[in-house]
Figure (tube, rainbow, N blue to C red):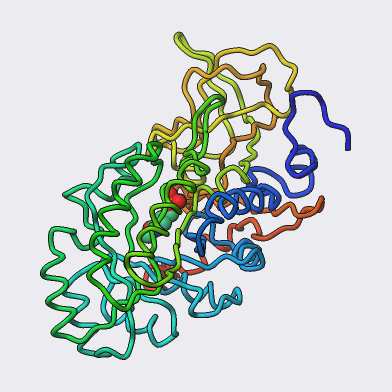
Length: 417
Ligand SMILES: *Cc1c(COP(=O)(O)O)cnc(C)c1O
């Protein structure tokens, strides 16, 4: 298909064609971009025995999970529900790591009974886990090195007040517990947050983790989490994974030498693997000129894409219906009865009623954070693979909105005779 100059295509398919087929708003993902990102990481860390566990909370559609499984990826999960979806997608239990925070011991035991790897981030939970399994079920320990990484406080999880991980200042306590409970520690882990730009900051955290790792003799792997940033704005810089790969694998192989054994190097990227693969396509309901602003009002809202309001996230927006239009300044808003701004004062090719706007970087933490606020149905999801498009989540219907509501007979109006 020939594309108008300036109009994005998604895996070779025109966004307008996808909207004609599936309607709008619509999430669309391109597997070629996921594969490119996976291979880029694999190449960057090829100096080590490396394993990537796709952090599936970013985009949890079972087809996406299967796609990553076929690329050789493992899976990072944060709830028992994600664990079950992973198993259903065909991952072997040992290729799934369960990294919950604040869940009950019952949920952790349930995951262990399914045979997945368990990552523990609380000393109290470690005691309860040991009371159940003793030394029979090896665990991974999530440490918090307290390095301050991450662009936004809401997505930075390594700071001192963070609820995540066991503080590295508690390692003495941790070691005592491990020894006296007879727990077998097969992995140590850190995940300091998203959007880490500075390779040196990442390496500093890694060094702290390696320091603790020396004290555990039964290790099989070290998991350095994620936080790889991708570009959102034109001209944005992203994590230099090639530089990180070179430095990290050198540091890691030095560690393995000192440790006396080859270990596996693991990461669990979410955003890096799927963010750029996704586009969110909306239709413009109306434009509205006020005393101060020109608004473009789309048929969606923070119920479908919450990141701009939640994290001040930037999503690049292009007008795919009028790519050659004269750029004008718009504030793009949704239809939700809350302040619901997707983008302020953006230069976008002239927007007309009925135009299709494409929100870029809509692969990670977009559909998975969507909800039914204002009794709106959630959009459909489409996967583009090898030049063909496939529906992977149906658009919700009016019936779906009431599916789990219980309509009590006690409020039926009494019929008087
Ligand atoms: C969310 C999460 C990730 C993925 O983070 P990204 O920034 O999307 O790469 C990795 N590990 C854990 C434990 C997480 O909770």
